[in-house]
Amino acid sequence: TLRALDLPWISSDTAKRLEWFNQSLINVQGEDGVWTNFSYKNPGWPVTPQHPVCFISATDAARICAWLTWKERKEGRLKPNQRYRLPTTEEWLVACGGPTAVPRLGNVAGPEAREGLWPKTMPTFDTSDPFPRTAPVGSFAVELHGLYDISGNVAEWVSDSQADPSRMTPTELRQSFHVRGPAFSDGSPDMVSFSHVRPSLPNKRVVSIGFRMVLEWQEGLSSLPQSSGREAHGTAGSE
Image 1 (cartoon, one colour):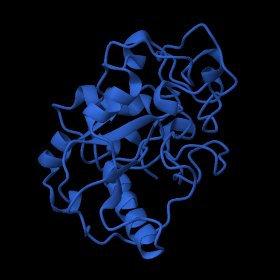
Image 2 (cartoon, rainbow, N blue to C red):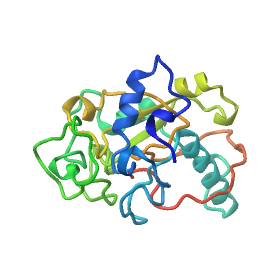
Image 3 (cartoon, helix red, strand yellow):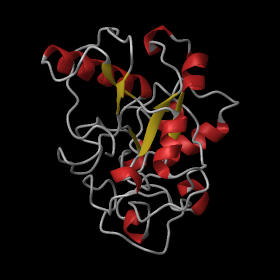
Image 4 (tube, rainbow, N blue to C red):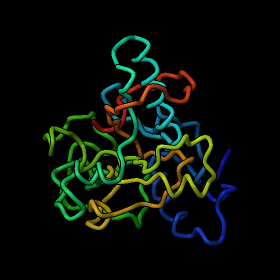
């Protein structure tokens, strides 16, 4: 078994990250803080292919984008100058309406979130919704640009580098990948703000973080690094 405080990457200067990470273990730890074998297929509550994928690291997400690009090019569905990738921070902020935009109605933490395992010190809003954890994509009204779930459900990885993450150092990964947007576990105005930036742990899988893809047309783009070829089940991100 693995306990939260046994994680080897925790050091004395990461107290803020530890507090944030422990808050993300909602409904993932069993009794007495012991972890069980959860994954994106089983995050600790029932999910269907209509739910957003969570428990996905930034490097997982980047590899899935590369794999799907390879797969759909091979099938003739994408042209050589088209590819899937993670959005950049700038693109994500355009999608949400900007850092000062007011979040729309979305799946965030209300009284319903206190079902099951929930840290006593973790805040919730007074208004409830039908979903204690993640909701099927599109359960809330469409937002700007025809997108869904920008204002809640799972926070999302963004990438500000086009480099191959497998060749990056840990510092480069933290500088390149960031997490934006509200999640089902957020229950305070500062956490659901579009300007909020969470600590970046690109190789860690957390229940409240997923991703969405951008389909890019780029002149002169003809090849990408090979991916592992594994299929991602469920909905990629919140879109």
